[in-house]
Length: 349
Image (cartoon, rainbow, N blue to C red; front, top):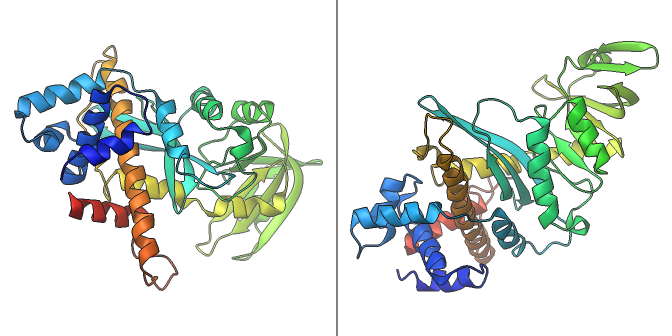
């Protein structure tokens, strides 16, 4: 199919040189065809009139030029019609040889999937630290007006707003708590079972305070000190027999609801990886830590994937609106809106 309609649609959203927009449109169509971010495969489908080596050089030239993430954030926001939005945050990581690829991502929760608005390749194994989280969070808050960020709504593992932030067990620590509070953000964070909770004259491991719970029961502990900060503590025992323990500053009765839609970010990572664009097939790595280009290349490649992802989600929503799709026994659709859109686009191209 001719790439020009895609190019013209993208030109309306990106104030970029026409040649760069044309490349983006060709890249996205090639990505849909090969369903892989491996640049050698992308080059085979990028432009049939050009030599393979020429296509490969064109991809590298594009990745050598900065592609601001705020452009992508505004692109994503242009499709969000809700007055208020919910943000999600998590990491996805894998290893290629001795090199660790570890993306920390913030996205808008939308129709069962998170649409990324900021990301960074941490270039290391393991968890993010408070400084890294603060940097990416500040990047998002500069782009998204505070009055568009909904207060205390369900998320996967991080919900950021002027008044609320919900996070998984990785996103803990006194310094991180203080950063959130200094910025007027209300944390709603899952804590580990062995976290020390202090209330009045008693101090005990977190699970001890909730060890009388039966499966499905919920208990609000009330105000207590966790990592030196006064918070509400809420706990439940899941049907799998696992403690789900949350801390928050305000509205503890809503904490479990806030945490309930945790799969938005997981759906995103599945779409970017095995169920979509096979992000793990990238060979964009370098063993020498002094070589910096691969970090920027990987983040710019991620930006191109976000454009393709948003397009697939929008098409999936349109196709789903045309016909009633029977739900599975658990009430979920047989395919995500992303997969519906991806399959439709692959049939077209």
